[in-house]
Length: 196
Image 1 (cartoon, rainbow, N blue to C red):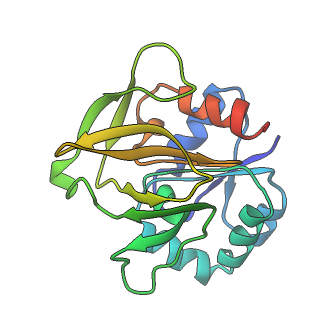
Image 2: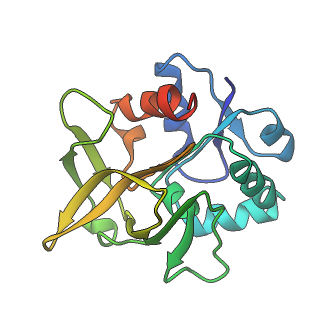
């Protein structure tokens, strides 16, 4: 399987390294030709507005949206979660999403950069010790459709907010597993989501 990592902005190198640790040789995706050569895609954390605008500038936006709609396995972390949503609360100017998961997300839901944090999470389908979630200006899922499976939640102010979700061949996390050295989320994507 040829797995691409969208390399327009953000921490795409870390995702590429995580794929390598899982025994997969990933491919950086920067052009339409690159999109045609991959079987699955990872959308990294970073600035969702910038990634959206650059995807349009490089004529990738519609190609990616169509591939996702056509069933290409896709995983997004943090900004990637925002870009895989069907609705963004308080979007930045000219910000659009690729779609893929019927959900509404809230950008910067956990606060600004200075309020970044780490916390242990239980994630459905991932066994062993709790997964250390790294949250950096992270979104959360505000609401979601019937076909969306919640894999993990985080309670804030007495309310459990989804921070990891899956809808068929598309999954997303609010947090950054690529920054932890723990590749269980990437393995779950490769072994469960891509092969579903």
